[in-house]
Length: 348
Image (cartoon, rainbow, N blue to C red):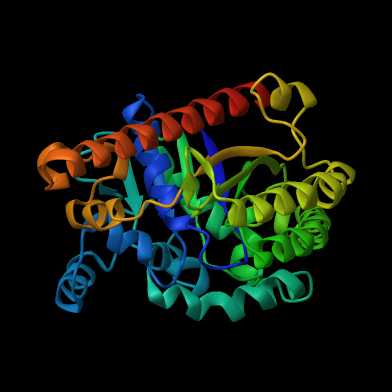
């Protein structure tokens, strides 16, 4: 089982959309997938379950509130006399093999406590079970659905929960968008990720965490690469205004992020990139803006690449153009999923 964090502390880079579409495609290709919604905004949960109003969300949490990421952590964070167990994952409608660990706004209540535990657990033994509890819960739930891949959708930010989830994952995909802020985020992560790695190595070596009921695992995070989304194409290529920032992002990865991660031991072997067509920019995929297809995708709880002609609700040339875009996205996400499978297999 491979756990892949999709993380960028810049918002608006399509992390949730990428998790949903990539997870669906991996399942379409025959893999069993667990998507984890760790963002307290719960956008992935809403997207997967097709909620369109507060009443539906309220009904879900009234019935399933004991099966969310937050409720699964309750035994550790509230010192209950029971062990953490797998939560009941939601089967995604229309896609066998794809499951969701539902998000929970109340997960943010544990942020401060986890931060204290990750800094002071050596001195305060009562906190020793907290840093390893997230990894334990995700692993248990993944095993309950026989998952081959776990995709973790994360909130933007550099808080303790994201730090924990990134450093207890096996791989990292970095979603970006073609703008100046994504370039700034790459520069920031070239400093942040090595610091997080050093913290995780220190934490996993501490006897109080290593011997906890939920041991904090030794970090083995490696970056798969970036996914650039939300640009407008012209004649099959990014428009010039977007291409500029795609190039700037690639340069930031090539000259600043990659050297920093190499020094921290957070890259795959060179052949894992080269044999899969990934160059020094570490770009896994360029995926254009979904435009009008995104509204149909959300309406039918279906990835843009799986929309039927009936769901596209168009005729004539408009339908032909929509189908052409849909098929292009299918090819792109199929290629991305296959690349992820090959790269993780070569690394394991």
